Amino acid sequence: MTQHIPTRLYLSEEEQPKSWFNLRAFMKNKPAPLLHPGTLQPATAADLAPVFCTECVKQELDDSTPLIPIPDGILEFYRAYRPAPLIRAYFLERALGTPAEIYYKHEGTNTSGSHKLNSAAAQAFYAKADGLTSLSTETGAGQWGSAMAMACAFFGLDLTVYMVRVSAEQKPYRKALIETYGAQLISSPSNTTDSGRKILADNPNTSGSLGCAISEAIEKAVKTPKCRYVLGSVLNHVLLHQSIIGQECKAAFDKYGIKPDVIIGSAGGGSNLGGLIAPFMSEKLQGKNDIQFIAVEPASCPSFTRGKFAYDFGDTAQTTPLIKMYSLGSGFIPSANHAGGLRYHGMNSTLSQLYHDKFIEARAVTQTAVFDSAVKFAKIEGILPAPESSHAIKVAIDEALECKRTGEKKVILFGLTGTGYFDMSAYSAYNNNTMSDHIPTDEELEMGFATLPKC
Image 1 (cartoon, helix red, strand yellow):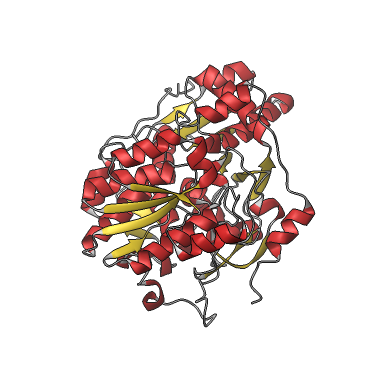
Image 2 (cartoon, one colour):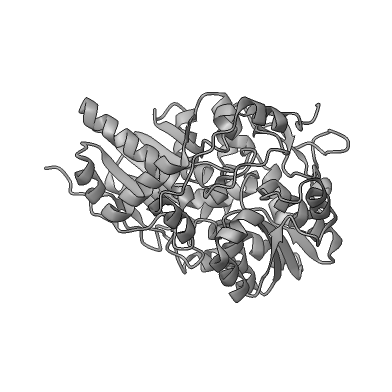
């Protein structure tokens, strides 16, 4: 008798993972080390200590410990919203007429509305343990800024958030939420930092970028006593914290006897994708499965599909350690589209190495096609997805329709990284037919590539 799979695959609190999963420990080809921007030598803990929290530095440099225990204080915070729902999309399957089974991990059930709270809680906890009094950060679409504001309020820390200008203009209620939790929000680039003033002097009308906002946030951190910088994606300690997503999926699938064939995640800096695939990818690296992993990025900011695998700075002002990653160049400024959280010039080093070694494939999709899928999903499944999450939805639907064409019954998992209730200007643009698609020309990409360091 075939087992009926419930709509929601529940885990109990006792089944909740108690450790983070370090994917790098299972990689034969490790991601290349961070380089000190001055010496071009591998960055040490002492090099990173003035910028990041102590434990985050330790985790960033650890590529050999498979499981890293989650402290009790963070587990306590997680209990407010985890385990997050893993949902069988029966309605979507029926509407598509596909033989595929479709599952999605819904990370938008907390107030910040996204997966970002998983790492925000960890980084705020570690900052408090270090005796810090404040933090600084950047945010694209506002999910990370919202999550960090929540975590800092919980742990009693001040926070300054530099939000990419175009997103700050598109999403005023993100600003209201962040300020409600007591953080200060500054539209970036701004006149409050040297790096911001330089960027504005060079391009007064810039729409901003995550690279610009990172430059300002780092400058704020290093010039403020008892302050450190926290990052919501790209670096490996952030992927480590997000591995709670994939571990919950793996535990629930194992509980119900389900084996995924395809795992799909949206990709900007890489945190949710890396977290979603971590335990499944480790088994693929050991020859225990043959899962197809698909990263989905905006065609307007195609780091994987059109970027170069090279050392690059993480910020526009070129102050960060150099990261070996697929990049469009730290000087690349994406078009002012609505995929705010995916508008980053580079990709996490672990995911970049896996992509380079052909363990991951990547697809770039246009904005209007993404919103076509977002609206379809909202009408069928009853959840309004974030624009970032909708990139994964688009390809999950594509894969399910391909199963319909071939008659093949695959199990598809995708990450629903957050909700879109702060993104109504984007949905209004879609509904009013004023949304446009921008795909950068080769000439535009070459301008970004020209900013890659010569090393």
